[in-house]
Image 1: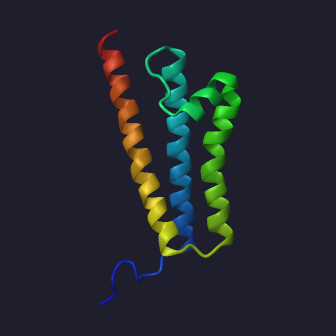
Image 2: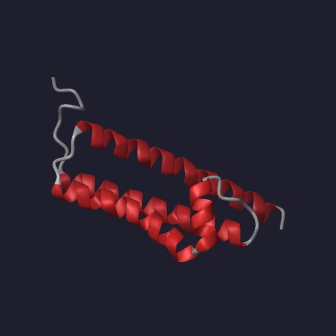
Length: 112
């Protein structure tokens, strides 16, 4: 019997996973932008906060460029087990971040 790590994963599956990561990153960017604009949250990452303060478009470009770069790498390279595992970790982290954003949105709406 083969383990899950030994089973091949199709490149289409990995590219779809990269697209999901892109969507989560953009949701994070949109929620973060709205939260900062309306004074409900502050950006915790000092580098991203300074980038946001300098130029909001650059903030969005940075948020979009990282998953796009990963998407391009996955398209042209054979993904290793390490890359696949890091992709899963990134999805878990961004899913957690989206839940945090949704929770503060619920809190803000409840107190309006």
